[in-house]
Image 1 (tube, rainbow, N blue to C red):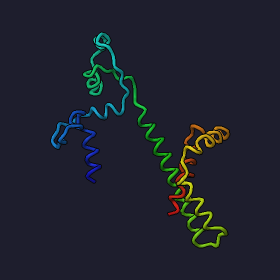
Image 2: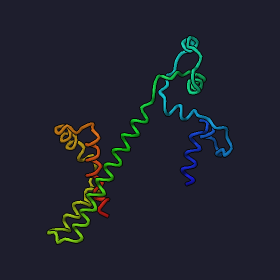
Image 3: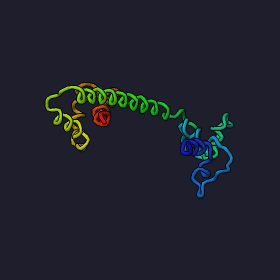
Image 4: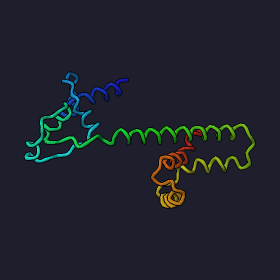
Length: 165
């Protein structure tokens, strides 16, 4: 729990407090980190900054103190959700397929079982760059490039040998 607590405390520290050495345990809470996370900022000239109306939110006030303006919402939350969907989907598929394969190999008489198990395990030994172009060409032909399903299938194929253990 200590690392998680440390991460949460770092989120409410000011940038200078979060990188201070030795680490500060007593600090003044700040929302600057969350303002940076949930907004896209743009650096502007002093002349442009002088023409702006007064800041309407604490995040705008923080941004203006650094000669920045808030240009819009951040893309970090949608990107995190994409990563979450892909990670959960590929992990679930790899564990299910690995478990079914492990059960089949352990309970049934499979011809050439040792060779098949070695083939499954040998996918971990192959350098990924060796199959990057063929996989790209296959994905482009199937319409899976730049899709969540394509990433889930690719990660599942790479990690299914781990689910068998």
